Length: 89
Image 1 (cartoon, rainbow, N blue to C red):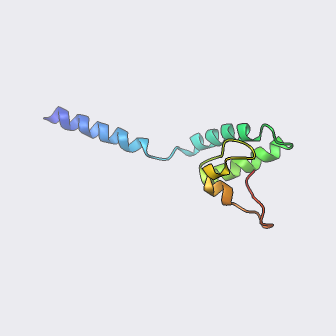
Image 2 (cartoon, helix red, strand yellow):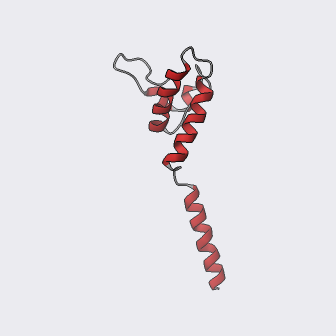
Image 3 (cartoon, rainbow, N blue to C red):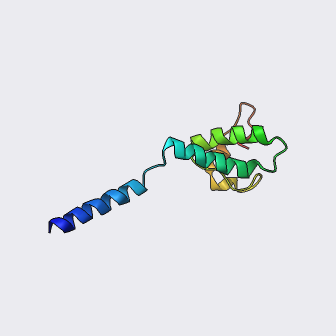
């Protein structure tokens, strides 16, 4: 009986940790990789990556292609600068 309870406890802990958000270090690596892919065709890739990483860290997601699929990440899509234009590339 104790073995079953122990296994159930370990399983529930494992399941609970799978739903936790990634750590800050993992999020930075995730954002770097996603933004490199998103900004590869940009005229100004360094600037694109910089702003993309800022948006990614705030929104926890990045759309796939450079000019499309912003609907995949509503937070990313809805961020605007002081001129009303999209803040996230």
